[in-house]
Amino acid sequence: MGVTNSIEYNASNYMDAAFAPVELAFKQAVQKDTWGHLAPRRNKTYHGYIVFSITCYGNMEVIDTDFKGLDGGPWLYDAIQEFVFQDWKELREGAIFRWDGTFRNYKFRGLRNTLYDPSAASTNS
Image (cartoon, rainbow, N blue to C red; front, side, top):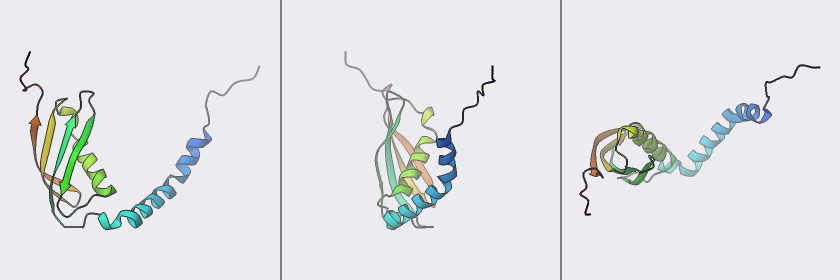
């Protein structure tokens, strides 16, 4: 009887890893060509807000954003997602928050306020 090799070789994962750097470079080039005019300008300060919630299922959802002079694009989207997700596990489920401040060189500075907290809401039974 022969010995069976328990190590499974997955060519798909190998190929994904081999092409990842090329695909990333292509993705970045497409983003720049398509949405480059929406990219935040270096050393420019944008004033704005982010409204977000932690759902009853524990998911974080961005509800609304607005930064004067900045119309969006993948760079702002990614920055907002990273910023809001950084401490969301410490926040109360079901609550709604509003952050007001500035966005400059991919850094957010400002204050977060609670707009709605279900534990503070009165119940009418």
